[in-house]
Length: 359
Image 1 (cartoon, rainbow, N blue to C red):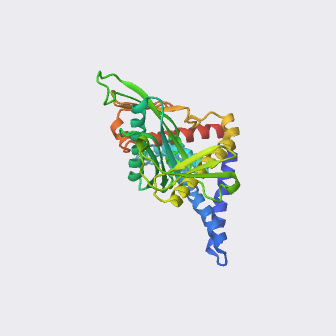
Image 2 (cartoon, rainbow, N blue to C red):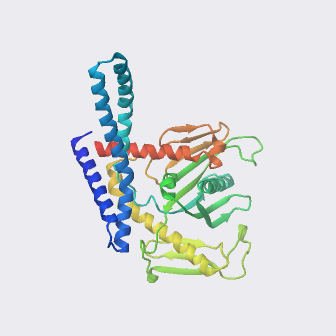
Image 3 (cartoon, rainbow, N blue to C red):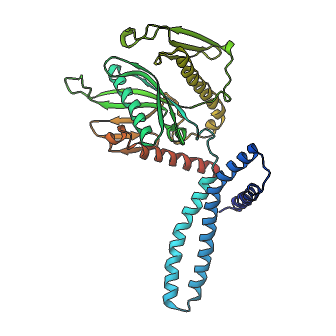
């Protein structure tokens, strides 16, 4: 490893020891103790990796000396075999340390707002949007996350024109952030008598959930309209003006919530979605310079970008950003097979960022 990198590793080990000693001492205030504890926790897995690397190097040096001594042919042969194993392990340990040093996305630990919308393809696109939304709902359940439906606009035939949900739990945004984009489906619709394969699309957007301290919204910048909620085809489902439309005047962003019977609850949900959208706009602005410097292997996350195709006749799912194809479409749609795709996307992103850092 490069001398500069080795120096950085030594600094991390020293800082970790300093934090351990400081936390063991008494007299720290609550906020300061929490801040240092968080830093110590973040450094601990990195230090564990560094220590494992150092142990492997020391062991390799010791075994190499034993092999070179060659006093006992049998011992020397065993030492040579162990030396080969250590040489094979060492690059992996070095790679783990390098990956641990990569800057983390500050939003990875956040909860997320999921928005799914039907794209081109009429009713079939709406049916696919409903399938996608339920795929993420099942995936959330498998990971033990809380999936709260915020709003669903149905077509009347089982499809969703659009649907949104709040997803909370451990590392939600970190796992779902690469799902933003256009998802394309190729299949024979149930309504297709001739058995022709149709192609349609739905759009997914995953936004890091923002808190009030992240995004301040002035009352003067907000127009609030209330109206009567309605179901598919305009059918009234509420006899009071409980639905809420929020318009953020500076940006023109509009959020509508009508699933709750309470106007207060609908407004609170609408504010949650609006904050997430405004925060995402800030993220995109903040990341624009970095995105200009490098084209991410897993794509820009732009909603206009086709990221994945679900081909039902062939039973395959293809993620176009990393050229990954899995022949397990039912497992993916059920949420069970989604981890394999997300793991591959995460690994590709880390490899691309590591190459950029070391270039």
